[in-house]
Length: 436
Ligand SMILES: *[C@@H]1O[C@H](CO)[C@@H](O)[C@H](O)[C@H]1NC(C)=O
Ligand SMILES: *[C@@H]1O[C@H](CO)[C@@H](O)[C@H](O)[C@H]1NC(C)=O
Ligand SMILES: *[C@@H]1O[C@H](CO)[C@@H](O)[C@H](O)[C@H]1NC(C)=O
Image 1 (cartoon, rainbow, N blue to C red):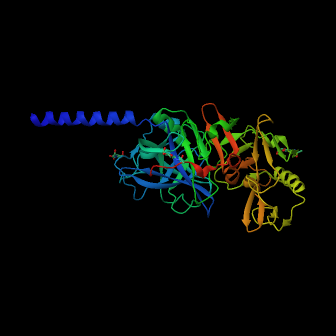
Image 2 (image 1 turned 90 degrees about the vertical axis):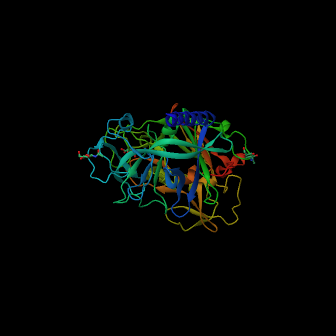
Image 3 (image 1 turned 120 degrees about the horizontal axis):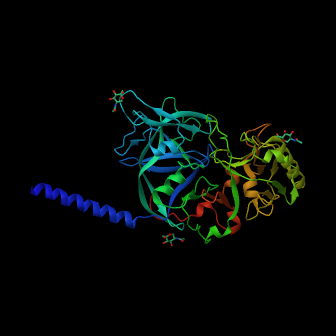
């Protein structure tokens, strides 16, 4: 009798503690540090997952549907839970597949009645069916100014993907999968927002340096970088465009794209308008055309006629500079000897991406247009996408670096700052104070 009342007291006590903790630990926003892998030019992050917690390295895919991880072998966690086929989260993930029976042993990745989904590697364009599951994840909180205490998400959805055949090919060494931030209800921004009741908004600031990292902030807070208060005040906005069809391989025909598309309407180079075939800039019924943002293309890729037209005007505007032999994958390179430099990189013509209104433009200065390929050689960092690509313009990593981008999934708009270098700061200047 005395024993059981003791037990009762104990469980009451534990309950009180965890409730108090939950109250004091309501984060305003969450934070993922981002590092650039210098050999593959991928943007990477690390989360702590499972019970006990284990660090997991992932490649960031800004348009990715959800987080997936290769986990069949050696996955040990007391908090792993497979998602059942009839559950609500299985339905909203648009899975369309169910593993009714999985032969024992029932380990992570193999359970009866488990919701199954296609994990996708954008680098190899290959897919594999994984088991949707939830597990504990520990992530750093933030108020937008500096990093705060770690918080625990008890069950964060991800896809547990078999290790044979491995889907990790093409990812940086040490990567266990992909962190998908795309336009879906099961991507990390959506899941974090529902776990902590904040807005489905996130900001991404990729650093150009592989030595000092950038940051992704989930939640609606004012963003501050050192020496510059409130970068948020410099945001300009443009609508995010719905693409009715996925632009990735192996997706069901009815699935809308989870990539972030914007409405590019013109390109100007030092105020000269580049002649473009406007029909390529629209998205047709089959999901072809348009302009999207990508973290797995290291450089902006343009359909051939657009690429050629941009190159022609850019060459005219840099006539006085010394052309040197091109270095792959680029076509136009110049000598940077005696070229000098500005706060926003090499002094080359500014490239203006005109958006839904021509007055709203994303400005690309030398630091984002030119790539230093060797001492004294700079190349225009755009790549020929060939004839007939699925998406006409893919804005890639080099052009995104040291720009703060805010993806607002509620208002369906993209906020952007153009180069932070103009404000005398950069994406590596986030104040990471507390230890991870
Ligand atoms: C899984 O399904 C098989 C076949 O229906 C059944 O024999 C087995 O007991 C089930 N396992 C679990 C853990 O439910
Ligand atoms: C960074 O953040 C910490 C904690 O909020 C603060 O004490 C420190 O002054 C900040 N550093 C700078 C340079 O703003
Ligand atoms: C513009 O692009 C569309 C779609 O690719 C193509 O059908 C059309 O022929 C192009 N127009 C011109 C003038 O090149």
